Amino acid sequence: METLTFDLDAKPLREVNQFLHGDASSLNGKEIVIENPNGAHSIAVGLKSDIHVTIKGHAGYYAAGMNQIAKVTIEGSAGSGVAENMMSGMVHVKGFASNAAGATANGGLLVIDGDAGLRTAIALKGADVVVGGSVGSFSAFMAQAGNFVILGDAGEGLGDSIYEAKIFVRGKVKSLGADCEEKTMSPEDRQILADLLAKSGYADVSPDSFKQYGSARTLYHFHVDNAGAY
Amino acid sequence: MCGIVGLLVKNQKMRAGIGELMMPMLIGMTERGPDSAGMAVFTAPVGANELKYSLYAPSMEFNWLGLASDFDAHLGSKVKISTQGNHAILVSHLEVGTVKTWIKENYPNVHLLSVGHTIDVYKDTGLPADVAKRYDLPHVSGTHLVGHTRMATESAVTPAHAHPFTAGQDWCLVHNGSLSNAHSLRRKLEHEGIEFETDNDTEAACRFLEWRMREGDDLEAALNQGFEELDGFYTLLMGTKDQLALVRDPYGCKPAIIAEHDDYVAIASEFRSLAHLPDIKNAKVFEPSPKEMYVWKL
Image (cartoon, rainbow over all chains, first blue to last red; front, side, top):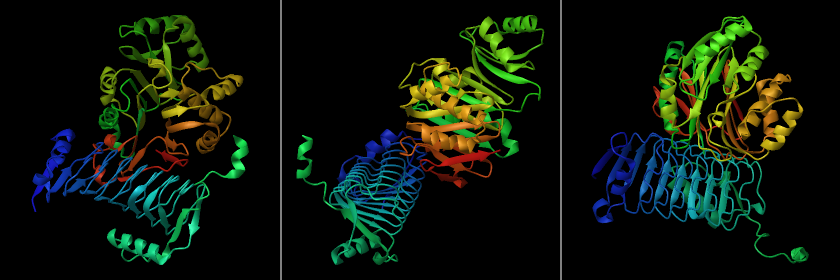
């Protein structure tokens, strides 16, 4: 497989991103290495072909945002909004991630080996997010669809106003948000969790060590007792 | 927005070069704060019976030597002064109240930036690179420093509104964020006899914490009180004569990242400002948790 290396100390990020946005026919199957990312914002955003991009260090805000099809590996940490609004493909952060990782992601898989900040998987719309460490407060706020696996602990207000996303937590939950409750794990959900753990490099972790959380669905519909308020 | 940077050098051999180490950190935060920039450097202390005063004048051609000779003539006490355009550092063994009153009455246009045994403050409007060049910041030396690049959101772009803010002695604070209860905090402090120099929200936080410490709180107790009383978004980085301290608001609205290395501790709003520090690959890089206190001592 052909490997291309870009050094961000030598080449402007805009040119590198423009190259990565080229025709899928010319890019498919390529291995791309980005050296000296040094916390730059928006590295490898908007990818849409079958390539593997490896970022050799710490990335800034919005790394691999809006990703489609491509695989992006960040060997350091990621700033706010990593893989935000991802549609498909995979983003793997080997370090920690800052706030709003995987925000509004529609599809694909985001794996964070370290801790993730506040508001992880906020408004999740169908992607899978697996965090090896712990997540900050207000994670999975208004999450609509998709699966969110946390191997460590969760902060305050987990799953506040959640819709139909499924949350699996192995550690402690500081507090649940409004309308989020513990669920009994069905055999189908256990299988979803087992598959995600295997895909994310945690095949040795037992799905039985997790608790599942989801929507109590009390906020879905207008409650007649509130009619007097109008 | 706004950018904050902080550096505490543990390796004694590297302290002479702290300005050089800091430069890429400050420049790295230009996009977050292109309006104004500032820095507080904690240097070798002046004599035990002396204090130093960082001063800002409205003109690059200000006659500092004239100010010094007026000071000597009026107060009968020889003052030491080192100057750099519109900035000067004055050293005197007179009582702090006497010096402050004399400056206010005789040179009302000269702004007092800081007072203390070890602190020097530089701040002005302009791009961080230009401000740094104006005051030759790459060549400062000291043990630790606190820097700021400003993108004004709630008060004017003037030298006085630039950060760091100071209060009392050897104390400074920089802020990324905005406080929603700065006015009520200010009314409370004015009731305690504390005077304000600007309408800036950060000044209220700075004077509040300094007031708590003057009332007997240690830094940790004052910061805990800050979590109770400060309402809004903030990452605050503070310097004392022998410490740096960092806090983020409980909602983690404003960023910070820390690099701890055997030779130094470096703090910045983003990794971009840490990327060029020596041997950064072997530093422990992490994001501070909201509503936690991080304090590093010399």
